[in-house]
Length: 251
Image (cartoon, rainbow, N blue to C red):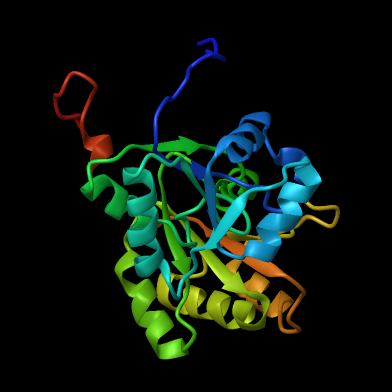
């Protein structure tokens, strides 16, 4: 399928714009254009977004804050802006807004108001980690950040004991070893991968069993990690008892 490079989206709307997760070369020309054309840019941290805009040569933009602590209030303001004819771009500090970052409440509010929402896709640590993990990509579950406390974390993992989907978890370096150990205890000692500093000069991906990786990170590394864990193995009972035409095998 060939790309259509001339598809306009006229009129006021909310733009969800992906930003680099580390490497500035991943900032797409379309993302830069939308941010340069938007009337207002809603961002998780105005200082971080200002630096990105400076790198892209974009100046004179009105920035408003939209973060975990004010998203509901910010959503109402964004709806008002779009209703009055403005084009609003929403960005997080890194990656795709709404994926473990503010955005979901804003999108829901804009949709509820009958206004338009469009996406400018791009970098995502979730998909980057999944694709380099070496684990199955046909179905996966993104779980976000794990609970901080061990008991809650183990209960949080329990519903996925029999889930065949590959699991993806965000985690801080300080709790990485504990989370891997809890996953091994609750889910079984499955194969996993831990990715750091994705797209950056010191990108690294470590692969092994959950217990091996938990032992490896006894001393917390630097940076935020993405954990990818193999899904539960499904035992298809008595599959070999049947022939392709549906008849039973003779033993």
